[in-house]
Image (cartoon, rainbow, N blue to C red; front, side, top):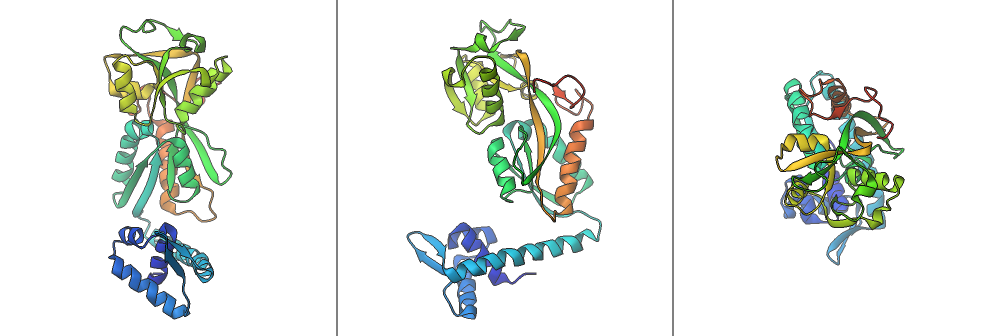
Length: 318
């Protein structure tokens, strides 16, 4: 509905590149260049500076970009409001989630949501919780599913459920027969850790710190963003790791043993959406659906084993 030239200009300015804008808009680069030229001719001034491998805004371009954001935002809002009159949810929904959530909770959530709203197209991005939180706050993602509670005042964060974190070791490891493990028992032992920014890493570091083991003294053998890689290295005897119980259960790794920490430690599944004055019904509906599904599923059936509904047991250590 909005002027196509403004859409193209906004994409070029946002990405700082004609090539990336063309890819995003599914246009050829000459077509993008033509639209920008037409807009500059309309205003009779240069809006973009090309040079040094990147496109930057001129002073006039800064003004046009600010108005373009407002105009395009209002156009999207209008189209969404009109579409909602049909009472049928439709469109692309961008979802960001952590690796554990993507692997074990998201498939069932998407299955149920798409069955109910078949015209919705989910577009999923997987990263660590900190990355997802930042992208939701920047309005690059519509909804975030993360393993940490956000303190960002621009975000609405709803706790859906909790999952116990376990120490995992290979069968035959000297800790494999332990009924529970204290922080001091792990000091000095080889540790296969998550990547910086991962919520489980932050929770583990806080656990060690609170129990007298400075995180910087841990014997880290690796920092990995891939959960399957962590499980493989632990299985091969490279050290211990700390993961969500649901992940261990779903992988069904016969070569791994999960042991509770003492005191017990829990991660949380949280649903993030921006605190906007206007929020598309699709975004709100999915966020509410996710919270409802995770808090009302029967444990051990539709929900991965190990999940704890907030309030169903003492979660003071979470």
